[in-house]
Length: 183
Image (tube, rainbow, N blue to C red; front, top):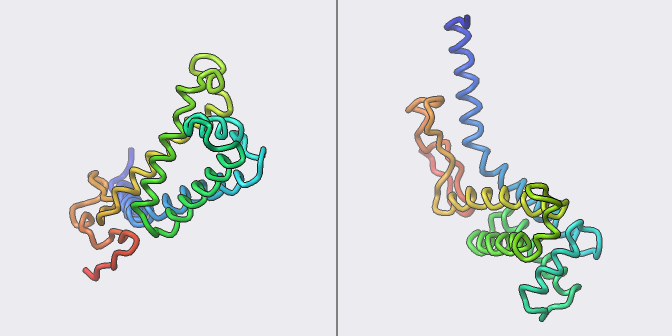
């Protein structure tokens, strides 16, 4: 049986961790998503290095009605992904960055429909390229979470783990370009 003192101690640690997560969750998300985009973007500057290079070029070629050549498709993706990553990390031009992120993510999901034979080895078993695409649902979710901060929103614990006096907004991380409040 857990003693009341142990429960209180556990609750204090839990509240500290929740406050820490509220304060640093979005900045850590921005940094990690930004690094992923920059990393994937830089790799695309070099032909054949990305595991999805051929599929990406084929997809962009089809989506642009083959107006762009393979090398041009790859370079556009390289610049786009690198730009999205840098925009997410720095917080510069957030609306442009997040719009580009969502449009790009929509494009990355199209092979699920356009090239299902390359995405699935068998029903519910994705190829390496398919796994690469499926992970984009996590990036989309991260983009949605970051978008929630555009108008000054932030992570707010609504669970009983954080008592009412911790629910004020003095701990909220300001959005990029927003002045921190001195509440």
